[in-house]
Structures are given as structure tokens and as C-alpha cells.
Length: 384
Ligand SMILES: *Cc1c(COP(=O)(O)O)cnc(C)c1O
Image (cartoon, rainbow, N blue to C red; front, side):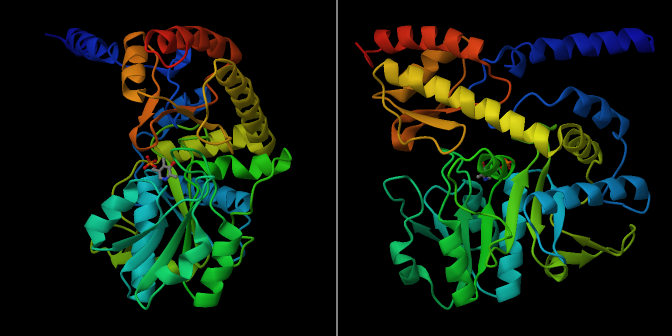
């Protein structure tokens, strides 16, 4: 078989599988924190396909792009001089890097997290033998810090605050956590994997949201994902650190590849997502991202009005474009929606479903969805 025939055969096989997938283009994915990557990110990704940032002396140009991307995040998050960052695969890796650092800086092995923390902290618990002290949430589903001092002890390596929780988009009281961490000399990691590309613009759009970034002196590190609200291609997340020197604490010597030392978890890693995230950040700029956040928030308002009109309740008033809808039997409802080609998330522990109002969703799709959702809710006895 010649090359062309072989290729067509493989392609046809793969297409069969691809057809089974959901895709973002019709707006039917309502429960993902990712979105359709911007058009230019696809072209750029391919151009950098063979670059390897694990071996930076081979690709010094791509390495420069990475440094520029880190600068973009640092500026967005009001980082002081001397701050730095690491690019990786997403929020999970960023959280691992942050706690790895906090553990090595302090030689301690307990962390304090809210109940709303991302499940990646369970991986951290298991990987690094870290003890998780989990703090309950208040009525607004934020970390209840009224008794936090009880959780702090001689073994506390870090406190984690969530700025845009995965389930509900809630923001923990980061300014208060910052004060506590300054007082107690504890590492404060802010998980803004989702919220990092939302909260700065909510502020500019006059929404009332707490401070969460490096302007707060107690904030030690922040995670932010470009492959979520940054609208870039998967995989791309970053962790930013207040002090450049801290990187040494999560670095190892390399014996044969360039650079002599390597920080963080990954070894070989593609420059494709890095170049494409940088391109998208240049393309949109801060004004572009503000517009995206405004659109998502307007659609969130539009959507929750319709949900309330159906007689359903929200778990809490959305802080950002993440919505939790209370239901009697979320699983049954979500499964029925799936059969009809619409995808929402089930949040068992809150007896609800999650909708994330990402940029690929528009008002027309919302109208389409609401009509179907109403019918399904009636069939399943959720509404009369
Ligand atoms: C999505 C998310 C993560 C995990 O990020 P991945 O990119 O899926 O690894 C961590 N924390 C928060 C708050 C998130 O929303």
C-alpha cells in the first residue's frame, strides 16, 4: 500500500472515533471549563509542533516566547519584580508544583484547603504524603475562615484559597487569608486555574469581587489556566511564584540535556501550546478578554433568569460564569440530556448540575437548551 492509501485508511479509522465525541462548535457542551480554542491557536500550535521546551537550548526562540507568556501572566496578576512562573499542562500540575514548593520551603507536610478545593489536592495528598486539613464552607459556599487558627499548627506548610472554584465559581476570602499567612509566616497558594482569566476583568466591569492576586502581600503563588477562560489550546496552565529563587527548591540537576537544571514536574514538553497561548493573549489583549468575560457574564444573567422562571433554584448566586442548579435527581436529568445530545455536569454532593457559561455558548443556544431542559424537567418531575 502506498503512503496516501495508508494514510487515508488510518484517517478514516480515526474519524469514526472522532465522530463519537462532543465538540464545542454547536454549543452543546454546557459543562466544561474548556472551550473551542481560538482559530489562530490551531495554526500556531502546528507551527511549533516539534519544539521541546524541556531542552531549551535547542529552541531558544520558543523559550523566549515562553518567557513573554509568563510576563503576560505576571502583569495580569500584579506580580512584583522578582516574581517568576512555570508553564505546564494545567491546574493540576500547577497545584502539585505549588504544594511541592511549599513543602520544600517549610519542611512541613500539612496543608489547609477548603472543601471546595479541586480534586487535584487528593492527588497531592497521595503523591507527596501530604495531610489535608479540610475547612468547611459558609452559606455562600466560600471557605469558612472563622475558625481557621484551629487548623494551623507547627506542621502547616501552606494554606490554599480558591479564586473561582471548579464547582460554583466562588471566591474564597483571599485578602483575609493573605493577612493570616503574613502573620503566621505560611505559604499561601491561590488556585485561580479558572478564575485567573475572569476575576481581573470582573473587577474592571464593576462586579464586586475580592482581591486575589499578588497585590496582596501574603499571596505566594497563583495557578492560572490558558486552556480554560484564556481560550487557548489544551494543554496550558501556569503557576506563578512571588520569588524567583523559590524555583531552586523544585529543581533538579540534568546530566545530559541543556539548561543544567530543570524546574517543576515535566521533562519533554511541547512548545506548541505555549506559542499558541502567547498568540491568543496577543490577539485578544486585555481588552479582548474583558469583552469575552462580559459576554459570558451577560449570558450567565440571561440564563439564570430563565432557570428561575422555570421555578428552579440556584445553589448560590453566581460569582462568575459558573452556575449550580438544584435538582431532586441531577443524575437522571443529566443522563436524559446526554441522550438528547446536551452535556451538563452532575454535582452529586450538592444534588445539582453545573453549567459553565463558556465563550462558545451564545443566547440562541441557551434558548434552544432551555426549551429542551424545560421538557426534560417536566418529564422527570423536577418542575410542574
Ligand atoms: C480546572 C481546575 C483545576 C485543574 O486544572 P486542569 O487544567 O484540569 O489540570 C484546578 N483547580 C481549579 C480551581 C480548576 O478549576
